Length: 266
Image (cartoon, rainbow, N blue to C red; front, side, top):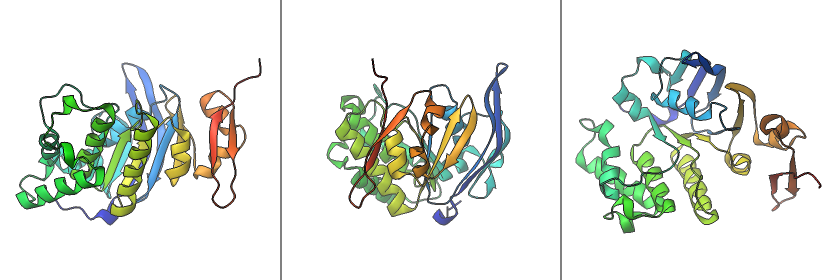
């Protein structure tokens, strides 16, 4: 099944999930337009990662409906779904006995029997070029730094050539330089390929800068969704995270506003 990248929207309707008698997700509904950069924020335990796993097909047994590219997700075979959605988990691969190239070749598995070897080689080369990892394609992943491993994970998702990419905390554990690199890569893939991106993040400034829509979760529920400018409204972030935030900077041309928790005066 070849994918029309322009049809890569995702629609969530009444999504709920209960595990061992505990409600994890409750009646979540939202749409991600084809090619949209969509960020999900919220406190630890809000259900953000579980939401991504439901969309990716890793976690099942949910109520409600997930539609991917106009198809009901529960009726899409796992291999077909892997041609539609790529999932990048939190963290990065550690002590695995594969080279970078081996790892990217495995990401092409959903397309085996559909694409040619030349197609696979082209997709892998393009992914390495976009993430600037060609120089260490022959190295084992275990020999790479944390930032380099994260690049490999992003490259693997790019090589999978899906219409949507899900990323769970892609900048966690990265220093500022690698955070900026990861943000530029995600933005570039979204812009150049028109891939829908759903990013779970604690970095509200990343959400404010890159996303078209931000959704906030709390205790398994969607409590707010809107444009990133809404993050700068007084009291909204305190309601979401439980602590007050303050905006710094300016909206003037060339300026930029950033958000940071406001520490109480002692």
